[in-house]
Image (cartoon, rainbow, N blue to C red):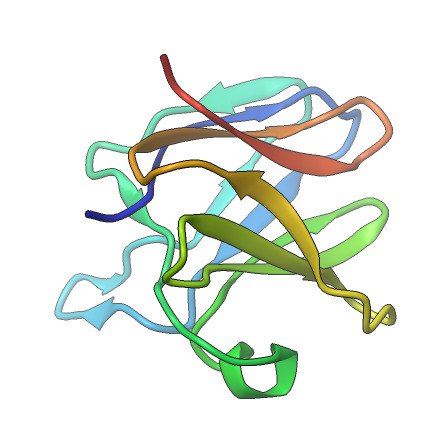
Length: 120
């Protein structure tokens, strides 16, 4: 099973950009999106959180990225029921979510900090 982002909620006063370096298709970079300030976005096709194993340097070329007014976060499915993230400029890998795979909401709070929750 996999994690899929079904909704992006941007509560900040600046646009955020989601980029996915992995799934280039004939339609282009279908998972890369710009979400305007104080808006929500629900993609027609849920965005796969790319599954990869290893440390940041090993996953950076396939992990999702979310750019906010506070910087860039790289995040991925670690294949062990967790979504891991690293903030650019900070080598500390954090666990954003620890639960079985399923549909997720990516929320950027008013300060520009992203986080993920599992949909109920």
